Length: 498
Image 1 (tube, rainbow, N blue to C red):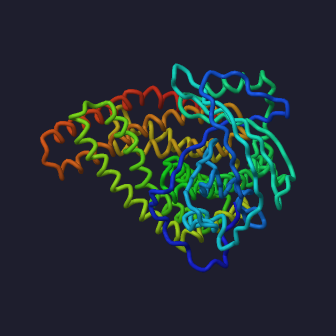
Image 2: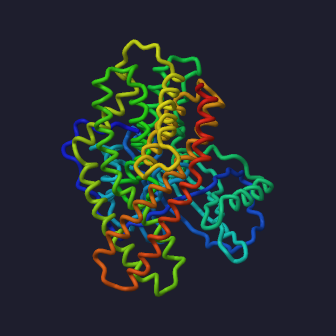
Image 3: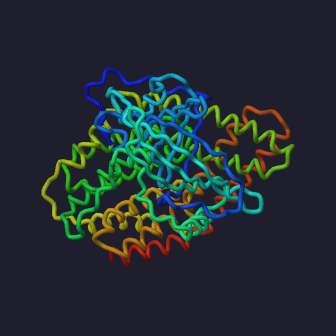
């Protein structure tokens, strides 16, 4: 992603909560087809034929495109809307604002501050798309929209290029439903798509994939640099979604990247100048602390919404009030977070993260990646042995932290160690999930008790009691799994690192 512009004046105002902005996670499969292709008979409902005219915007250097981001102004039957698509794991986050103005909305520029700085946005392509298709169903349940797009790349009213492609976009159901539809389309003549968005095909741009890791026999410092670059890009990629605050996964991935960067710097500290490492780790620690409250509330909201759906109507009302209480806290956390993400201190951290992979300040060291992973595993094993058979909550949380550090160090060493490291990483993930459930239950109980202090309703007290009891059962379930999981993790670690 492009670096933040050093010459920019002041950071943008925090992105306001705008009810007219819609967002959704776009999960789709693309296929390419020839001129003679026809959609096969699929069980479902035909979709109305549509004409979409989209003008795409980017900088003259295509900074958004190189970051995997697309921004367009779409017109359909007089309706005009701005749409922004952001990378999100294997999917994309689509954000739409119905707005007739010709200039890109301020809210979108604010979301893209790291990618744009103060650089100018200009129209780079106009695409006209005739779209037809079917809404595939199973037992009357909609699974996916299967659309055939006939794309014309326009300039000054003339057609410069034409191509056709199919999109299978999930509505409901599981991903295997998309795979079943894909197989039918391939039998009808559809072929592999190169994965590029329509704009990339129109501009003949290639998708910049992730930088390949160094060779397994490359110096340890080369692997450290590569890992720093990878996680820094991951953090920056999810910055816009975290600013928007609509998709919890964006914030989660940004926080994960922050932790992984800290863990890498911590483990590789003997290879680098300590003052440089410590300064960068301190800033990353602060960022993690800023992201933490909003992320923790996202986890609790997802849990209690699911719990609420399973309750009787009379018991659901107190929990609905509790969820509204959490949502109000989440809104405040988002406002605080946005202020910090527009600060000069945060922008300076981003600049340092972008520079770090190119020239981390190194010192002479004979330390290998295996050494780094073994050191972190040794600390984890010691913590597990010291915990005994009945560890308290603080000890369990400490083991969880050390398991994460050991896993991140193992991921750094995986290219040189191979399958033993891969197997250890898989076990470490399982341990993290179980211990994470334990920690989530502790936090959930604390939120419930805090809410109960402000409620005098007998029904609320009854429901709160039920919820507290469920948190205790969650903790007991986690602690019941712990001995076997930790024993298995230690065995995997000893096989991998000795």
